[in-house]
Amino acid sequence: MSSITRLWLQNFTAFENLVLSPSPGINVLIGVNGTGKTHILKVLYAACAITEGEDKDKPFGLKLRNVFNPYNGAVGRLVRRKNVSSTAKIQITRAGGERFLAVFSNHTKGVEDIRTYRKFFWTQKPLLSAFIPVKEMLALAPGLIAISAKREWSIEEIYVDIIKKAYLPLLTGPAGRDRKALLGALENAIEGKVILKGETFFLKNKQGELEFPLLAEGMRKLALIWLLIQNGSLTKGSILFWDEPEANLNPSLMEQVVKVIFKLQELGVQVFLTTHNYVLLKQFDLQASKKSAIQYVSLFREPVASKPTGPVVAKVSDTYSGIDPNDISGTLDRLYDEEVKRSFGGGPK
Image (cartoon, rainbow, N blue to C red; front, side, top):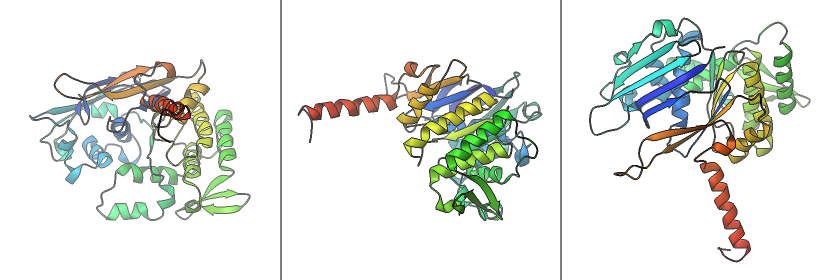
């Protein structure tokens, strides 16, 4: 099975020296704002993207720049800020032991100046992947790809990429039992199926055909997952990067979202996601079973003697109870304590 087995980031954005050994199943990244959760997803996605589709054989530096969109396209701005010259290193290892390395400094401006090693071997086998950003894009899809191809604009390439993935034609032939069951569960959740007319997506259900701008954003996210499964973007050996699935999603739907993510893991999809939401995080704890391959990664800034905060570091746990620190749960506990104090007359009213 294709999967990411190791990530090493040195002097890259918020990280001074980060080493992660991801689960082949589900990887849940938590941490306060500014601890680099989305950056981990983006750098992994950039390395996957250059192995398949229209990005195959694209220079890694170009994809990295387009995914992060630094000011004036200067990739050197992705190097961790210091008062001296600094070099960033990105090393990613996949199942089977194949490694890919990229090196550049804070003085690097052009993507052609990023040095890469073993890229030829890295790209010999595709790593199918999809990145779902926080902002749902299918409602904005008509005309967006054509505009992006003709105009220079300040938008991260992940937004265009996911629209292109959604536009891929559906797979032909039988779906297979597990994939069929997952598609059926999603159809029940969205109460219909997705169809495409021209460049506009519609949800077809008992009410008729509803164009995506008329649907709640949470429903559009579930519909997107349906599309990615149906067209083969999410299949055994592929990787899903999902930034804050809970964004604009009613808490009542989070149980269904987590069920879908566990089903994807059972199908052989490796999942990386970020979250700030207690309900979503707790659903992973409640639904996990002995056969679930799940890992929680807590990112935080470690205090150092000379500064109030230092570089971002990570602690990893295979269980919800082992997450430390857990700012999401901690915030909920503090709110509960305040509510108890107020109930007994000890707090503001």
